[in-house]
Image 1: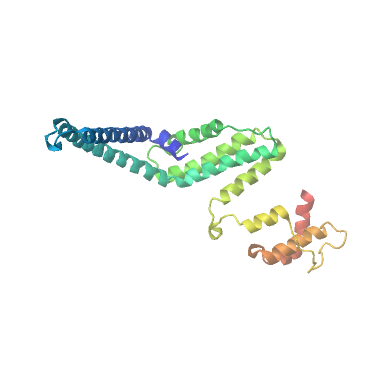
Image 2 (image 1 turned 135 degrees about the vertical axis):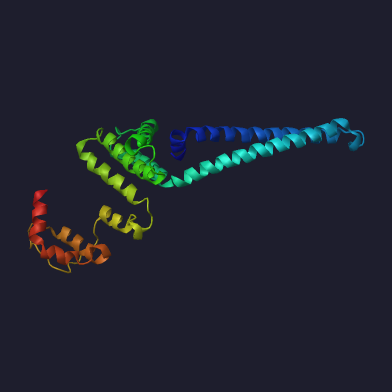
Length: 261
């Protein structure tokens, strides 16, 4: 997707990049051809190599060709450095876009009917990139453009895919997108995905000892299993510390939330 950013937002640089790759390959072939010619002449030379006119002419030609190749490669190197620089600047955009593509592939596990092509995905990204000037203006800073691409693509993808999902799967799709976005930052201290908490959410609680009685009482609206989950959360995760006490203190509020569902 980084190449797509360059292709759409910096068309000249993208074309120069393609030419640079082709030229580099052609230069390598030219150099090999010249080297092979010189080696062949050296192997077949029957006289003093200093007196071999054809060999001396080939060496002179090889020198000229090498100078041309060096100049061409130097120019190509500058182009590729510009490309690499732009790719580096947009790593965050590429990360978001590429990770969200795998959300679409995961949807096939939810229902085999959910099949989305790469062209469909790239079309949404291209429309996002091409809408930048209209949304921000031509003088927008690159940092503003990158932030817009990330936010706008995420929104566009959600809107386009949600229309094709069964209503019961839209929340699941939102959840999968949320996990991928949180997992972009692998440092939990900076808001990354906490895999221990995620496993707990997926697998549920394993605690069997009731360290505090069920505040709703036996046969009440809160099952013992749900209360055990709250107890384990409160002791296992720092972010839920003392949640059990707060839950007891606000029991009537939580009951309203429970009944509203």
